[in-house]
Length: 116
Image (cartoon, rainbow, N blue to C red; front, side, top):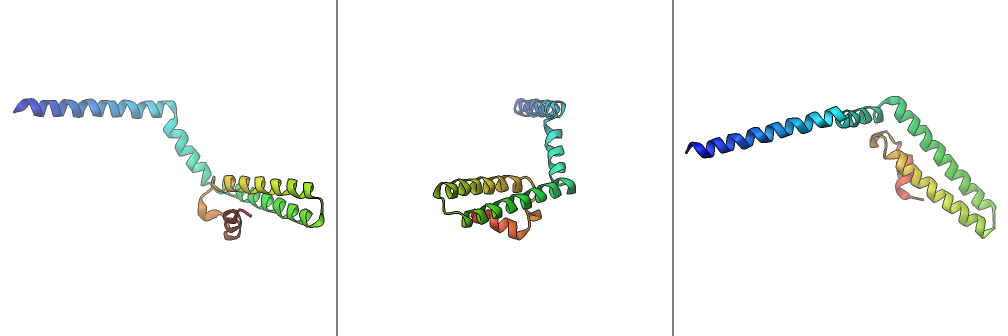
C-alpha cells in the first residue's frame, strides 16, 4: 500500500525539480525576461506613437500613389504603382500588428482590413 504512494510522491518531486530547472534555465537565458520586455515596450506610449506616425505616413504614401495613378495613362506605370500600393498595405498590416489593436484609429484599421 505504501509503494504506490511513494512512487507518486517520487514522480511529483522529479516533475517539480524538472519544472524548477526549466524555469531557471529560461530565466537565466533571458527568454522570459525578453518576452516581458518586448510586451512592455510594445505597449509604451512612445512606441505606439511612433508606429501610429509610421502608419499615417504609409497611408499618405498610398494616397499619393493613387493620385499618381489617376494622372497617368501608362499601363506599365499603373501596374508598378499598384504593386507599390500592395506592398505599402502589407507593411501597414505588419506595423499595425506590433501595437495593441485598440490603438489603431478606426479609419486606418478599416483601410488596412479592406486591403485596398
